[in-house]
Length: 187
Image (spheres, rainbow, N blue to C red):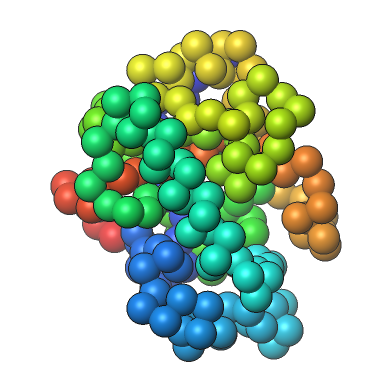
């Protein structure tokens, strides 16, 4: 198995890259989040779903991620990370028709401000039935992680109907705990 040497950051064109719902000043009451809650009802190309308690849950997960990262020697410069996937993810890329993407070489990421979970951090930190759950990994562990467990790569499904009820092991998630200075070119 070949381990990807890059990360992909997916984003919606109208919001631009490296934005975080956790940064919304009004949290779940923010108009941006309120629009996302119901966007799928009037925009068939938008397949992402959020529960009303998503931001509160996300902030709890991000606090756990941050604590685990610090315990492993990480030096986060933000309270919450920006998200990417290891390599690319046809599944994530197809989640919304308007997705844009940036590819960033892993060598451009600072190991002191970059962590990984296998798979998505929501799943990794809320379940216990796999050896890679309940922990974060560091950049220098990528090859060992993918050598042992592989690189999940789900194709674009015929339907994203109720995707949140699946095992959701579609990608390795990368968390960037710093501003993306120097990582955005041509965005």
